[in-house]
Length: 142
Image (cartoon, rainbow, N blue to C red; front, side, top):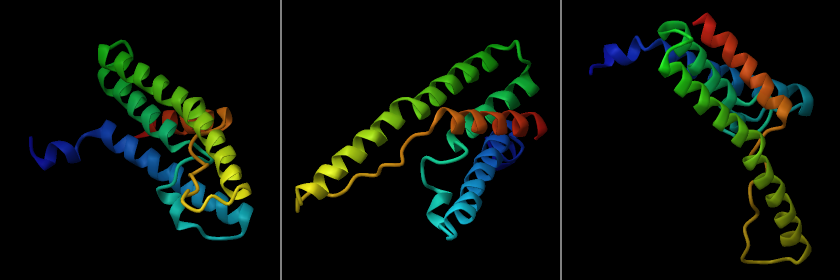
């Protein structure tokens, strides 16, 4: 399998473009709401919109567009997408809330050997939904 096959893989490009748009949007929204440029948002987790949701939904709808929405490959991609989106809004969000509480304990008790945990891990349901809509649009467009 050569580079030309990868370069012409439309579902792969749809997923990557959707991810880039979502991450770029996070930088813009951070600049608008917080009046600061934060380049770490290009690879950071959490925030509006969910780039995980955008990526997997774009992949899924691009697969559906090119292989048929009744194909087994679309079904596999769709189930994979639902698992990722559930994880983003459920499990990773809960882990972020736990990290927030642990960080408060670290500060309150001045624990010297404890490093603060990353709190922004997951997404609100709205962030996941918007990411999913972005992914559908990009997946059908590319």
